Length: 158
Length: 289
Image 1 (cartoon, rainbow over the protein chains, first blue to last red):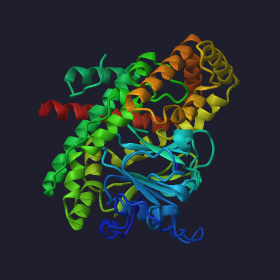
Image 2 (tube, rainbow over the protein chains, first blue to last red; image 1 turned 180 degrees about the horizontal axis):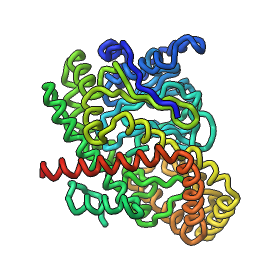
Image 3 (cartoon, rainbow over the protein chains, first blue to last red; image 1 turned 90 degrees about the vertical axis):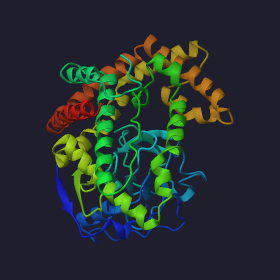
């Protein structure tokens, strides 16, 4: 098991306004660049630096929480393919995730599902945690999670 | 034992700690998690106050809210109360809408709001990261009041984040083995026969979940709840009347144990640090009561 402590130079305030809550941005996120363009540590620092946006779970189409989130949600979203919350083009496009909730409803974690209506396999992101690259994450049904998330709901824990 | 409302009584803590040594039940585990979250909230309030910010710790999720049924709903009492849990989701949304932190943040200037968020979640200057099974990197800021509170409770923050994140991600390694096992599939067929006898034609519990949005579409909340309860109770009754409940639990334990053995160091560290945190949470809440 590889693990490490990452130290970066980014200050949260710089990123604090990059993803204001409630906005399901219409602007496509810039791709994270070719593989190897950033070290794993540098990408991770971007995710960590974005922890200044309170209350929401943020979904990014690029790896390493690059750019603006494609959508940011306070609550559940049963179908990224419809027009509410994460909508339409956001379906099957998530590549990195940031849980910046406040547990206002009691739930701390977010479970993301392969299919709409919380179906198929799932992955679970703990309180105030981020996932830098879904290419390496597998749903509970065994399939890869990158560009395949279609719904999410808040849960008590992972 | 009733676990719904929880105020951190010493007797309950003792039960939880004892349960950690013996076979811990779902309810005990939920009570322990709620107690730790409550203590975490108390530490965060103190930490935020030192920096001149306010914070209202959320009420931890109840034992009923913490229940998960990865294969089949097999608790008729839970099903009678909650159907598939739609009422719990609504309850959570109401609490979230009333969250005083939300109102507090909304009333602040952008600069001030960012300062509150940084005080709580850290500036992102450093983080603990761990590669979970499969290879994904999960991280968490190790600065800010949340990390500070967790460090106080768990003792070793980095070890806690690494071990608990790995153990929280193990189910993807064995749940597909459970559902792919011929014994599970045979039990699902028997369950489906039982449902059919009750006038409900579903091939699997999963199929109910797929059809549920359509079945409750346009229904009032109370009508949707009745629809959920009717189906969930039948699902649970049939899970118990056929081998499905037992087969699912047995296979989950069998395949789960294999994986937990493989990740034994992380599992043991998670359990040890959780017990430590429970002890510290008990002390804190006893002092404050």
